Length: 470
Image (cartoon, rainbow, N blue to C red):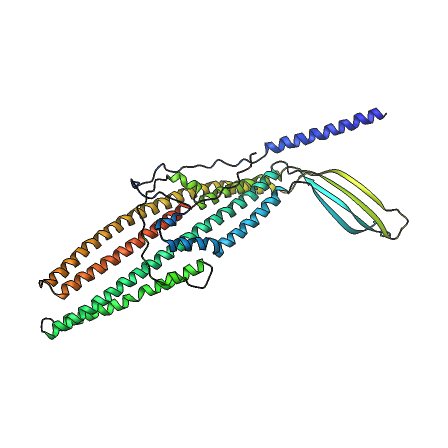
């Protein structure tokens, strides 16, 4: 008799093992794979010929190409103090905590409880205390789906934190360039005002000596008035830029170094040879779209797992003490251990509709990824073309300044030897000042195009958690 009970017990254990093995096999069959994402990027840039020599791209410290110690210090300080970066870092910490939670969601848990219970006949009350434990196995892709969702959220938060650093660095550099360009424009406009005053004085002298006319004097005065009005414009840009930098540095105080005019930053020759395919590892929009696909695949996996039974184990060890009614019953601790099974039978197609919705969402996420790649390549291509155009414009503006410097020197020489008058010298000096302002603006636009180019590349992205294999 004992032998028969033993054989029956062994048989039950074998059946449970077979059932568990079957469930695991079915779980592997229904696991939702992550779609392969296309990487359809062009092999080379269009309408761009890489410079034979020049500074190579540095996605991590691209602003150092300006070789400006003040800019370097401001960017480093902003990367440490900026509030948006701190906000993104806190969100990243939250995502890490939720990701750790997801990894332990389908592991056994143990709880201790104390609660009051009343017998069905309402004659005896019990004070119960003890331990209980539940363990859902997370089969049929449920555990993997939840892990993918949490992993995608974690990776997205990491991408957002890196993107915030790229954006803040770019904004600091942009406002610094605007500031130095405005200061240079203010100095040039002050010189224009001085030259216009000189022209007014010359026109007054010519009128007194009957060599000029009242119309000439009125025209000179009108040009002086216009120059005085234009001279106040850079002050607004200087104020706006310094305030924007202060906000990026998370302070209300203006840096003393920014209030003192300094040389406008100048870029060296830049050689961009990276291929568009490199954007797949740098642009945050593309990396976010990739994580959205992973998250959509995880949500579809969970929706499909809801079509299958939920399997697990449940156990408890509870001690019950009578506190009213029949107090003669002894205090006993009762252990329980057994399976828990939830089998979906009929729900009017609710779960199937969720699966269909998740499939559509996954397809949309894949299409959004393709769109992000196309838009990323197009934006970077446009930024690179813009940078090339601004580089050529800056070179032409520099050549114009050199030519006008030679003309201004010639006018001064002619005035010294008596073959020219002050009007010719002042006119040549005005043309030179305007050429310098155009060159300063060209340097500004080239610098801003450079910042836009590296912002379109996306900067250095962190290492991300890889997708779990089915």
